[in-house]
Amino acid sequence: MKPTGLKIIDHIAYLNGKSLVELAKEYQTPLYVIDEIGLRKTLTMYQTYFKGQHFESKIVYASKAFLTPAIAEIINEYHFYMDAVSIGDLYIASKANFPMKKIVFHGNNKQIEELEFAINQNVGLIVVDNLVELKTLTKLLQQYHHQQDILIRVNPGIDAHTHEYIQTAKFTSKFGESIYDEKVIDEMIQIIKESTYLHLQGFHAHIGSQIHELVAYNLEIEKMVSFQTKIMNLYQLDLPILNIGGGFGIKYHNDEQSLSVEEMMIGISQKLDMVLQDNKRIKKVMIEPGRSIIGPNGFTLYQCSQIKHTYGGKNYLFIDGGMTDNIRPALYGAIYECDIVNKMDMEKTLLVDVVGKCCESGDIIRKDVLIPPFETNDILIVYATGAYNYSMSSNYNNLLKPAVVMVGNKVKVISRKETLEDLMRLFK
Image (cartoon, rainbow, N blue to C red):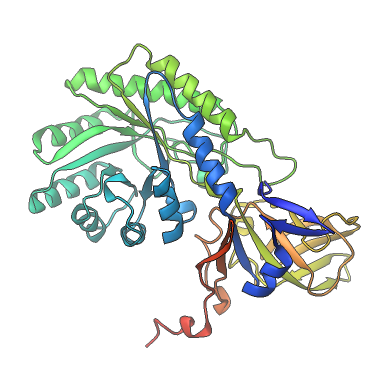
């Protein structure tokens, strides 16, 4: 939950030797902060623990969690693949000189211009979501005379016990085709076999997000290996790649139980080895971690403006950000932990709701949290905001998007703070 580089000196929080109070002053709040050293440690942990004797491991960074050119460059340093879900993702990756052959292009409703961009950029893998999309892609590949490796996204029908908005493998999900819909699967395979441009490499499934236990992944592995083997035998195909997606959970609040990267990857690797030991035809297994890579290695700093004591007995701590830089509490009921960075080890005696400045009653970052005695201009840290906070940020109420700084041996601005002029750049 807390970044590994966080230390407390004389009541003040430091990240990799840099005072968070000084960071907030220099770069202005709200401020997203990425622990570069912690991020690199996490990437190394995935490389170390996701491997097996009976499969070649391929790690795909799920860029929707957080993507800037600087992040793409680091991901490439560690020889990871990276996914994309839009033309914007593809464009950023290309501008960051990320190898496009190592891009896995997702999406349940890819537009023509997105597929054309992917084709022209020689994207390595396109994950075909459904029958209609396959037909569209087939026509485009014929038009461009382009050879394309693909995976088919399928739905194995596994309930991963996450929030309903982030469950992706139930039979009612908008993603993929059901592994039990034999008619649709057959039609897709026939289209692929008749095409000289489509090269099916295997199947993809993703069972949800913020998953904390191995049971769901073990079931997914069993189902997907069985299904892919059945398809290979039935249609005389070689399908060397299985992509089991991501969704590995992280710890957001003190009462949450979550497996470590090491525990999750060792468990999944052992299950894959057991299932694949007698199956030499599935040679490569992909996973797609995003949140679990960047989430715990990021946090947000805010300036505390005032405390409002209501007639009903509620104490509201007002901060200078809110749902525009962290929509997840309003969207999912997500819970975050927080501290006052200039009073880290002081006794917490005041119960407050941390609320933002948007004109919405739901603009609440954290309910019922204890903080030390309050002073105006205290700096609040909200932990584990590295994933989906910047990605889902908005200009609601015409608020400015915060800067993002990455703190390693030095501080680097990897996304500048928006200006008032930026708000006008699209208007006519």
